[in-house]
Length: 102
Image (cartoon, rainbow, N blue to C red; front, side, top):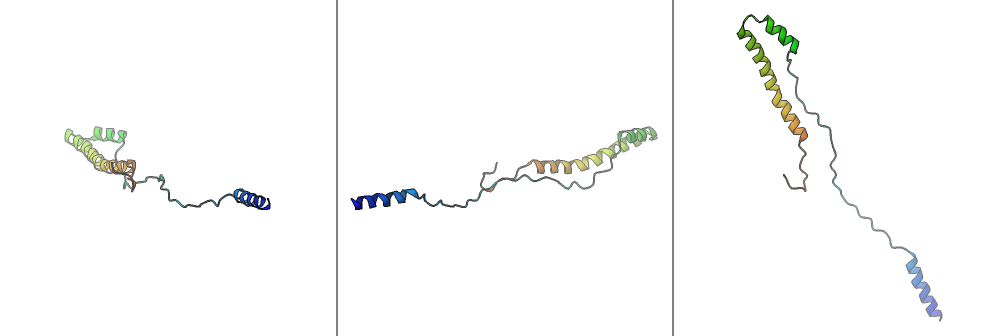
């Protein structure tokens, strides 16, 4: 009888202590948003609407008016590809290393 009580006590003491928790270190990759601040260079000095109207009125002939408007358009067209490239670069999400490229 003593042996039976001793065996029950030993079994119960083994059930009373929980097993040690396993500590597992895992690496989790999380995308972190970063601000996009592209370098656009210096903005061209475009004329305002009022300045263009005043220059068109002051222009002596049609050729000067066309030249004035063409110069402004070329300045704008030269700067816009930089802006479009910057917007495209900021809007694209870089592909993750583990994810397939789309």
